[in-house]
Length: 166
View 1 (cartoon, rainbow, N blue to C red):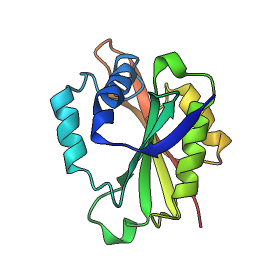
View 2 (cartoon, rainbow, N blue to C red):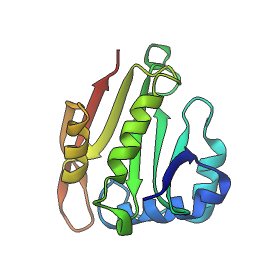
View 3 (cartoon, one colour):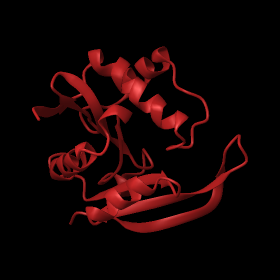
View 4 (cartoon, rainbow, N blue to C red):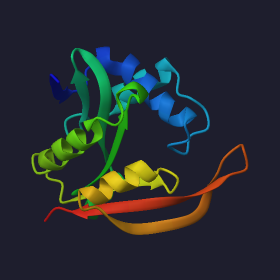
């Protein structure tokens, strides 16, 4: 399999948004409405890609996944070395190790951006993501029970997984 992990560029916004909306529809995050393409473009324009970059996993010329760093509790100086990490894989490309390759890449890149801690915030119903994080040494640092309520009446815990890189 030929692939590369590279920085996200404006031309990637459409496939990235499609992948993200798949996660919303499948209940992998707490959004209940999909994100429009204009909303994603605004998101991209507002991001500080120098400090908290986004990357795509390109497989044979197709964006198959993406991963990005976000500020954790933006503006709080004591938390500047901690980043939130988020990742998504297109449903047609799951189960072949893309998420593992992206997470490994992001952990390796953390030192470049000065991150000493990574935090992943996810729903307790996202079992595959929990297993992936644990595979890379992330530990549960917080559990907010049953705070995510979906339109179908189901609840999920909001979990904070962390990895200390120091």
